[in-house]
Amino acid sequence: MGNKKILDLQEYKNKDKPVDIYELAEDQPRSKSGQDDWFKRIIAMMVERKWLLLGTLLLVFICSMSTPEGLTDKGKYAIALWAFVVVCFLTEALPLPVTAMVIGCYQVITGIAGFQEVSKSFMDDAVIFIMGVLMLGAMLVKYNIHSKVALFILKISGTRIDRVVLGMVTFCALSAGFITEHAAVTIMFPIGVGIVSLSGGIKKVPRLGKLMMLSIAYGVIIGGIATPSGGARNALMLSFLNNMGINMGYGQWILMAFPLTLIMIIIVTYWLLKLFKPEVKDLKDVMERIQQELDAGGPMTAKGIAAIAIFLAIVAGWVLFSRQYGVGNIAMIGVIVAAVLRLVDWNYLQQKTQWGVVVLYAGAVSMGKMLVTTGAAAWLAKLLLSGAAAIGISKGLPLLAATTSITALVTNTMADGPAVAVLGPVFIKAAELANTSPLAIGVATSLGSAFSYILVIATPANAIVYGPGFLKASDFLKAGSFLFIISLVLTIVGLAAIWWRVLGV
Picture 1: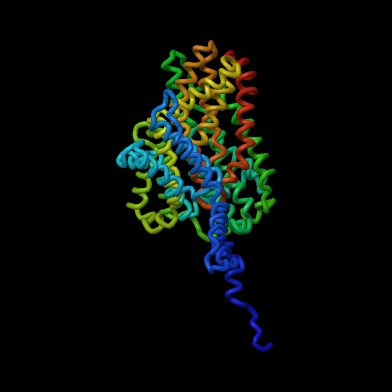
Picture 2: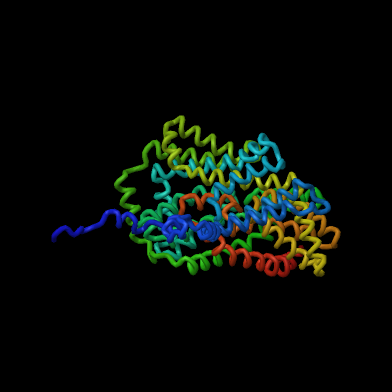
């Protein structure tokens, strides 16, 4: 064979190495003077960072504009950051956690808020909740509890992938209406990860991974609208309506909103299966492997039973005491109890928790608060309403369509609670002045605030399923755009124009 190499190790190492435009620039012929061709290097860098450059230019442009009437300088700076963040989240111009850190630094540098206030805004109860959910999910995985639940679901739905997805979407949707969407994600998230893992891993079945994660996230989104307990935004809207003397009961909300959830279960299942055709058509082998693992592991250990008990206690705490103690605090109590009982140790939690997701959602919460406190969110809402009036949209179904669409767009760039808190009172008052049903406008606004399909930061459900790395930010845009439009159409035409009129709303 002579001296010929069977395998060039260096060539093998470089085989899958991503192309580095800076190295390519280094390899270009140098000019006659021996100087690097800086112009080509700059052009290459600008091409790679085009979206970051666009977002930065947009931010600078808005900041340099004269402050519009009715808006403070801080509000203008807040809108500039809002525009920059939207560009970054849509294009991943920066790693998403880095973009979240930009949100905090920008507020301090521009004087929107002091560093103490910004730091506090990053440690919201919702952020602690995200952290606790990820840790509790890691605890369930450690004791293989997710596999046991997965087997139960597979036994009910069958092993065909379309039926499994339908079962997961249905379970998430129905449970999210009563135990909050956050708890539903916590239950189903490890199951989805387990199915992908037992099917060969994300590198072997990337479309299955996307399908599992989005089935969970979108399932809880469409379920959170069904009942007043499906999300804080619903309870907030009920409060606004009651303050206006419009008494609306729990059952009336279900009657008005639940049909949309039932229809969207079918649509979400069909759309995701069509968009991300899974590499695996039947999960029979997965179910058998899960059964084998469970049989090999023997009966549930005492620690496993204790882990289940803690988790169920936390879910009960979210349902019964979240208004008093907060969902984040309750989640962390569960983590602390698990650590005290030595069900998990800190090293395990540190390795299994996606800290980037925690930072990401902290930045999103901080941005939402910034838009509210600076008056930027209210100014934007009034501006959009004025624009709607200018094109002849002033009352009735057209006004409902405009307000619902505005809310749905805003909720994809900030948390649904702040979106309803800022837009709800404005829209309900507009309905009253326009001789349009405040009840219809109010419920439609709350429903629109749930259509957070498009951005990672739009809802904790999206942030959690983004954590394992199965999804890109562009996947939410790709899958969520159609669902966003169809949800709006069904709300405006199916519910408001037809169903609610039958109910006499």
